[in-house]
Amino acid sequence: MRLDKFLKVSRIIKRRTVANEACSGGRVSLNGKVAKPGAEVREGDVLEIRFGSRVGRYRIQSVKETVRKEGAQDMYQVLEEDEQTRMERGEA
Image (cartoon, rainbow, N blue to C red):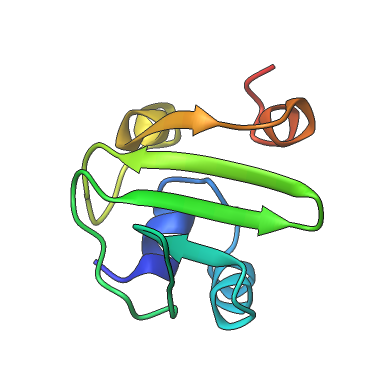
């Protein structure tokens, strides 16, 4: 699955266009390398997203084309995240 689509389906980033812009702007890394929006994601990959001084790190647990909102959090494991990012994802 494409990285930008995974970010949207997993609801780490709410809209695919925003996910695409974040990837194109060099703010998303996949396994330690800057990733483009079309990069393929697989289970076990480590994803890092930078927005200003905020950083979020996630391990991809599963890759699904569609998922209900309640099941989106099962697609990844949070490795590192600040409080503001956690609140924006609705998990605080």
